[in-house]
Image 1 (cartoon, rainbow, N blue to C red):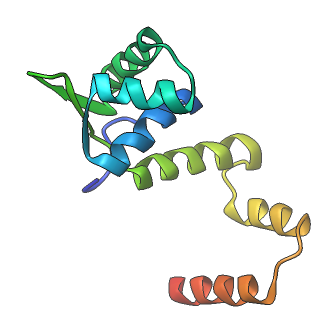
Image 2 (image 1 turned 120 degrees about the vertical axis):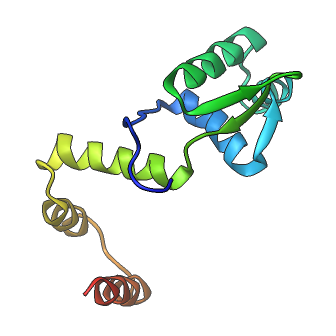
Length: 125
């Protein structure tokens, strides 16, 4: 997205299934989304169409006729940022430092992971 979203679009897991398809394929007809979701997740067509409608109402996807062609209006990176901020706010009082400290305190990093984290931090300075 160029700039900041006018509103933060929060997506649940089921909605993310549909978004992943659109992020990978750029544009798909609703009937094709439904077929793919049925094959991999087992949802019936009506369930998928309900989720698509919710995503349209939220402003996450757009629909074009003819063919009920759907495309993502938000990028995966935008959604990741929104969800990350929501998690930090809800669980760690908005503190990235607290999150990282808690997370790293509960796992063992490989040397490669430590080097990569150092590279990322150095890039931020």
